[in-house]
Image 1: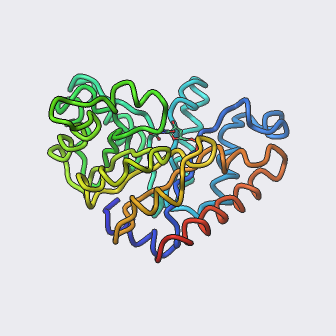
Image 2: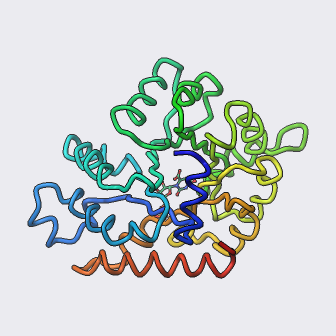
Image 3: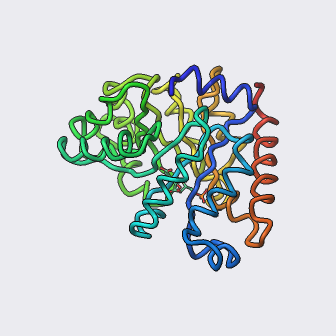
Length: 270
Ligand code: OMP
């Protein structure tokens, strides 16, 4: 997908919402688990059907699928095919390895599966990310500053020049691609640092997880992160797909998505 199509879709739908399909078999309602051959697929089908008009992206966290073995890969494949063309799709795989291995990760998520983007870890450096850039209209989403506590272990360490490791990483990653094929993951749990990332990556999209269950601030994230072309995909996974554990889970997911869109719209002009 091209950047202007993503921006167009955000404007048309008045939504920056990315719904995380972190579909955990343990949280799939019993009536689905007991009645369908592939409950993960059926759960996703209902969530996608009820939310597709109110989000601009879906993020599949691959762990939830690969942990299920072959039925999980099948659910991933078939769920992806249910997503309308104009919605941006993310393989949240957090991959990255020596070049020839990364090439196969890229092939997996961009050819075997036709995702628009993949999340990658920059830890192994330029040659580990390069293979992901070999595809037109595909996006590389690099872990910039993550939402978890452990981000203080490495990402927040101060370098001798006073910069933090995450700042240096993001700055260096600007050399690998452009704002038309690169996004950064920036956790909504650390809004006080978003400004410093915007100073480095002024027109890149940020994929922003961490609102809802992780306690991130939507308001401050939008205040510091949003730009003229929006520049943000706000992710919510558990807060939407598990808002109800009953038979109405898809209807409640729909209303939670609408609610989040409304909260975003309080701070953004589309
Ligand atoms: P919820 O907390 O349920 O909304 O889920 C957050 C989703 O975003 C999960 O799929 C996480 O793996 C993912 N995520 C983070 O929570 N923090 C990060 O720093 C990065 C990611 C990610 O790359 O998507």
